[in-house]
Amino acid sequence: MKAVRSGVREWIATNDRGAIVKIGDPEAHEVFSPGELLQLAAATCAGLSMDARLTYALGDDIQVTLKVEPERVPDENRYSAIATTFSLNLSSLSPEELEKLKEKVDAAVERSCTVGRTLEASAQSTFELVNRTPAPPES
Image 1 (cartoon, rainbow, N blue to C red):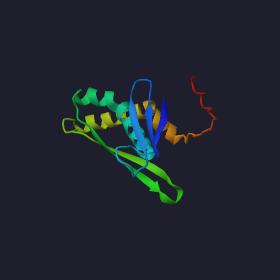
Image 2 (image 1 turned 135 degrees about the vertical axis):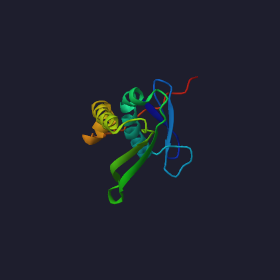
Image 3 (image 1 turned 90 degrees about the horizontal axis):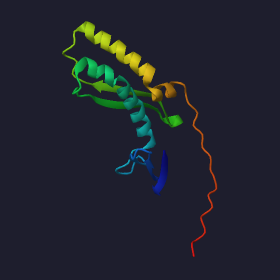
């Protein structure tokens, strides 16, 4: 992945598969802030991890919406928790089936959600500044 600065406090990130994400200041329009991307990464990683379990139990066309709510620690400019609520119709399941599904979903997320496991382990984030000398003009 890479990102290129596209303006004051704005970046455009791309990956090798052609995806594009605009990242910027939380006050800017039509961008995700880095904090929002972190929250979405945690939430959608869990969603992707549980998807096979949900579709097996409820069908391929199951409608799921997630809502992310971070717990902020303003004095430290960080989040202490990222809570995600998945809303879906579970009315076709018996209480026993629902309990089994919850167990299988929990296990799938624990096993497969790299982002969640990374956050739990408190991964270190580093950076480095490298001098890039401009190429000489072509004559």
